[in-house]
Image (cartoon, rainbow, N blue to C red; front, side):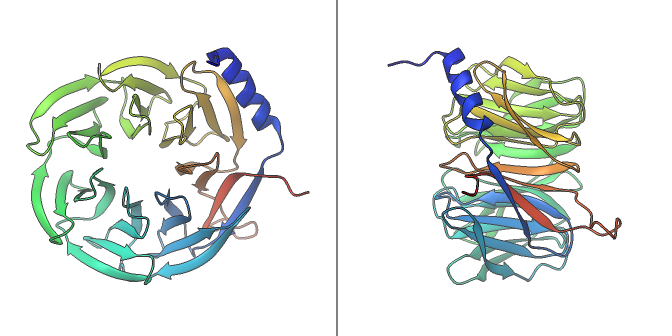
Length: 324
C-alpha cells in the first residue's frame, strides 16, 4: 500500500505530538561545536572548544558516556565517523592536524599534520579519503590507509562546507558567494556552479536515500535539490536567522534545520510542510539525526544559569520516549 504525502505528513505530525523527551548531557568544559552518530547508531561523538572529543554509547532510552579523547591542542571544530566502520572517528582541529580515533581502544590511531587551522571535515563514502578545509580556504585530501596527504587544493572563494555525494564521484563545496560548486572526483574538474541563494551558502547535506541534497544559507532559507538534475525542487522558509546546520533523517522523510532561532525546524522533505519544532533557548550550530531512529542530537550555545559568560558544554538528544 502506497501512503500519500498528505497522509504521511499527518501520521508524522501525530507521532511527534507525543511528549518525546529531550535528554541533556554535560560533556565538555566549553561549547560543543560538532555532534555526529556513527554508522550503526550505537555511538554519538561530540567535539568541543575545550580541545576534547567525547564518545557516548546509546542505551535503550539514554546515552552513557564512554570515553573522552584528548590530544588536540586547539578547538575541535568538526568531526565525522567512518561511513561503514563504526569504530573510526575523524576530527578536524584548529591545531593544524586531523586525527583518526579508534573507539574500541579509545586511542588516536592517525595524526596527520595539515597546513592551516581546520574547520570542516568529510569522509568519502568508500572510507578511503578524508577532505578537510581550513580557515584559508585550502582543502586537503588525505589518503586514510597511507595516513598521508594526497592532494591540496587552494580555492579563491570562501569555502564553508564540503561533502561528497553518496556515490563518491562528485565533490560539493558551499561558498560565500551564494553558490554550490560541483567537482568531479577524484580529478576535481569543475562541472557546475549552482547559484543557490542570494546570500552566503553555509551548510550542505545529502539525504541517505540518494535522491536530494539540501543547502542552508545566510538568508534563513534551506533549498532542496534533486541530485540527478542538480535542480532546486523547493525551499523551506520557517526560520528567520542564518541556517547553520541541517540533517536528513535515516529514511529521507524529514529535514531538520537549525539556526539562531528559538526552534529547530523539522520539515517533511516531499511537501515542505512543518512536522515539528523543537524549542531551544540558544543558537544551535550542530545537529545530527540518528542513522536508524527518529533521534536528533544537537548542541546549542547554552550558558550557565548563574555565570552567563560560561558555556555549559552540553549536548542534547531529542526523541526519547517519555518517562512512564
